[in-house]
Image (cartoon, rainbow, N blue to C red):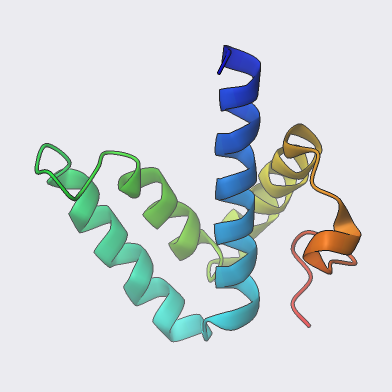
Length: 99
């Protein structure tokens, strides 16, 4: 797997996880899950946990903070373009729609 394929896979995984969190997890629980991800990211040197959890936790918390949400929407748009996900496959109208 070359660097471009790896980047696309990471972008796709991150996009799908953030989209799932945005649509399926209630706002208060999203913040709690985000903080749990951040705590897990701090202990990333342990076998199951990873340092990848910290930025994902920050993004989950940002879903509930309106000023940060605007930046996150732009990031989600970029991830969507980079991952080349087919919208019909994911079932999206907009990457961060809250329907």
